[in-house]
Amino acid sequence: MTRYMLDTNIVSHLLRGHPAVVARVTAAPMATLCLSVITGAELMYGLAKRPGAARLARAVDELLRRVEVLPWPPSVMAGYGETRAALESQGQPMGALDLLIAAHALETGA
Image (tube, rainbow, N blue to C red; front, side):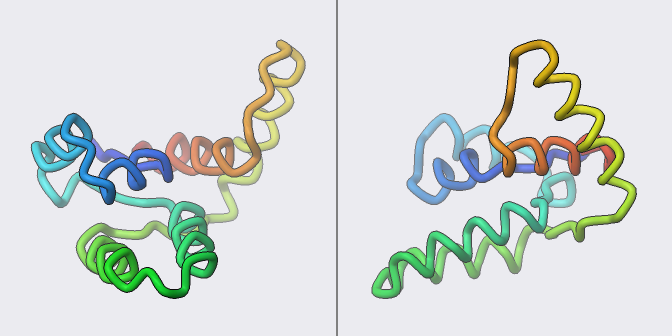
């Protein structure tokens, strides 16, 4: 089964109701969707910055209950290090959290 790890940008667009993202995500079977624990942490950070955003908090809670959040396995460390070094040597650095999520997706086959 193909898995799709939703990154923080996709989740943000989904929560904002961006039509193309909503259509694409809802077309996928729920069992194929997952989040990295890194994305979960970023969502919690976003909520902490907006303590009065009750509607957003409910939407995030619902998402986290419905979509599997994958833990960070230690096996991701090597892939992260190799990928980051390769990208930097090619002059294509990537944001640290984005790269952590990408390495997690690669390691888990999502």
